[in-house]
Amino acid sequence: MSILDWFLDPAQWAGADSIPVQVGYHLLYSGTALLVALAIAVPLGVYIGYTGRGELLVAGAANALRALPTFGLLVLVVMLVAPLVGSRLAFVGPTIVVLVLLAVPPILSGTVAGIQGADPGAVGAARATGYTRPQILWHVQVPCALPLFLSGIRNATLQIVSTATVAAYVSLKGLGRYIIDGRASSDYTQMAAGAVLVAVVALVLELAFLGLGRAVVSPGLTRNPLPTCRRTRTVRPDLVPPSTPRKAAS
Amino acid sequence: MITFEHVSKVYPDGTHAVHDLTFDAPSGRLTVLVGPSGCGKTTSMRMINRLIDPTDGVVSLDGQDTRSVDAIELRRKIGYVIQSAGLFPHRTVVDNVAALPRLLGVGKQQARSRAMELLAKVGLDERFALRYPYQLSGGQQQRVGVARALATDPPFLLMDEPFSAVDPVVRTQLQDSFLQLQRDIGKTIVMVTHDIDEALKLGDQVAVFREGGTLAQVATPSGLLAHPADPFVADFVGASRGYRALGFVEATAPVELADEATVRVGSRPGDAGAVDDGWCVAVDDAHAPLGWVDLRAAGEVVEERHIDFSGTVARADGSLRDLLDAALSSPTGRGLVAGPDGRLRGSVVAAEVLRHVGHGREAEVSS
Ligand SMILES: Nc1ncnc2c1ncn2[C@@H]1O[C@H](COP(=O)(O)OP(=O)(O)O)[C@@H](O)[C@H]1O
Ligand SMILES: [Mg+2]
Image (cartoon, rainbow over all chains, first blue to last red; front, side, top):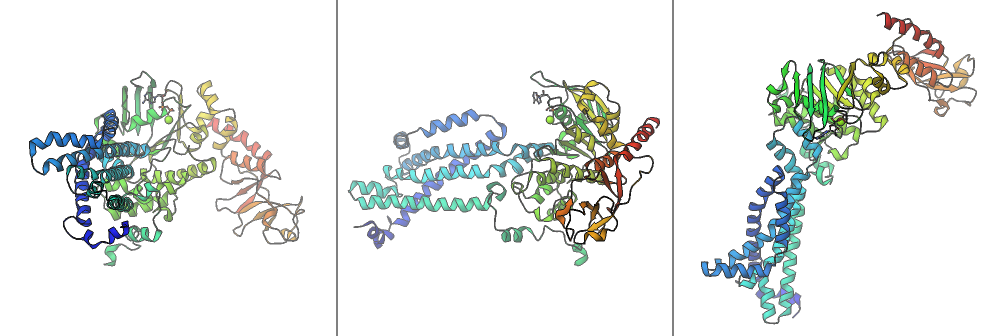
C-alpha cells in the first residue's frame, strides 16, 4: 500500500482513531504546553528584560534545558508521577511538563533579547521627554520586542509540535501513535504517514506565524513596506485635518 | 531662563565631567555649549532635565530649582533632540510626533493634525508623514526629531549635536531652516556642538568649554571673535576668526554698487546691450541673478551651460563677510548683490567692501 493509498483510505478519516482526532490531540497537547510555557516565560522575560536582573540565569537555564534528553526526562517524570496520581493524568501531566520545559528557553530568551534590544536611541528619547519607566516598557520596548518575541514563540511551537510525538510512548494519542504503532507492526507506510502529518501541521503553524507577524509587528520594524493603498486606506481618513472644522460642517 | 549655579558633576568612577559651572541661558534665546569632545557639554545639558543629577550646585528653570520638581513633570516641559534623532522605529513619522501628546491624553485626531502642522513647520513634506523612520534620510529624520520635540509646545528645548550626523550640505540646510523656525517660535534653547562654526552661526550666546569641564568664556558670537578671553578660546575659535568676525559686521554706510548688464537664458548675446569686458549677469524671469555669462564664449543663443555659477550672491542687507565672499568668489572679481526681494541690485568689488571694514570696526569699538 502506497502512502497516498493510506491517506485516501476512508477508514483513516472516521472513527475514534482517525487522522482528525489524532491531529486534534496532537494540537491539544501542544497548545496546552505552549500556553503554560507562555504564562511562565513571558512575565519572567519581561521582568528580566526590564530590570536587567537575572540575565545570567536566562543563559544558564536555556543551555541546561536545551541539553535535557526529552525522552529520558519523560520516562523519569512518568515514573515519579504515576504512583502518585494513578489516572490518565499520570501520563498527560508529565508529557505537558516535558513540552513546557522545551518551550520555555526560546520564549524566554526571545522576550529578554527583544526588550533589551529595543533601539537605545528611541528608549533614551522617551526617557528624556518624560515617559515613565512603565510607559517606556509598554509604548517603546514591548512593540520593538515583538519580532524577536514572535520568533521565540515560533521556535518553541515548532519544537513542541515535533516533540509531542513522545506522548505516544506513554500510551497517549496524537500523531506519535502512527509512528509507534507503525513500528510495532512493521507498517512503514503508517510510520511515514505519521511523519508527513507532523510535517504538515508544523508547516501550517509556520504559515500562521508568518501571518501573525504581519498582523502585529509594525512594518517600521520588519521593514516590509505594506502596499501603499492599504496603508492609506487605514490611516489616511483621520490623519489629514479637514480643511473646514468638522463642527462647522455638521 | 535656565540657570547654572556652581554646578559640578563627578561620575561614580571618579571622572570629573563638569567643574563649577555658572552661567545663564536667557529665555527665548539659543545658547550653544561648544568645546572639544569630552569636556562635559552633554553632561551639563543632561543635568537640565535631570537625566543626570549634579554632584554639587543648583540648576534652575525660571528660578525654580529643578530638584524641587518631579523629574517626569520637569522633562515634559523640555523638548529633547539628539544626534541620531532617536525616533520610534515602530511608529510612522506623524505618529512619532503625535506620540507624547497622545500619551498625555490628547485625542488622536487632534494630536495628528497638530503633528502635521509641525511637520510642515520643520520643512518636511506631507507625503513623508506615513513613512516609517527607516524610510527617511538622516536629514529628514532629524527634522522629524525636531518636530517631535516641539509636539507639546514646551518652553525649553535641549539639543545634543542635532546636526552632526549629516553631510555638510544637508547640515547647512538643517541649520538654516532651524534658525528660521527659532525666529518664529522663540524657545529657550540649549544646544551642544563640537563645531565652532555651527556655534557661531546658530548661537545668540556661546559658552566655550575646555578640557576638565570648566567654562572658558560665555559671550555673543561677535564678542567671542572680537575679544577671546584667553589663548585657549582664541585658538579654539580659530585662525580665521578675523575674517569670520566680518560675518557679524554690517556696513555702516551704503556700499557702492555698480550696475551690470543682464541677459536671460534663451536670448541672444546682442540683447544685453553694451558690455565692457564681455561678462554680463544671467538672470531668471524674476530678475534674480543666476551667475555670470561670458558673451564672447556664448554662441548664437545664451544657454544654461554658458552660465558660470561659481560666485555666491550676497544680500544687500547682509554682512560684510557675505559681500566679500561674493566679490572673492566671482569669476569677474565683481560680487553679485541682490535685494531682499531676490532681484539683482548690482555688483560690488572687494576693495569697496574693505573700505567699509575699517568703518565697521570703528563703529563697533565706539559703540
Ligand atoms: N556615565 C559616565 N560615567 C563615567 N564617565 C562619564 C560618563 N559619561 C561621560 N563621562 C565622562 O565625562 C566626561 C564628559 O563627557 P561628556 O559630557 O559626554 O562630554 P562632551 O559631551 O563634551 O563630549 C568625559 O571624560 C566622559 O568620558
Ligand atoms: Mg557630547
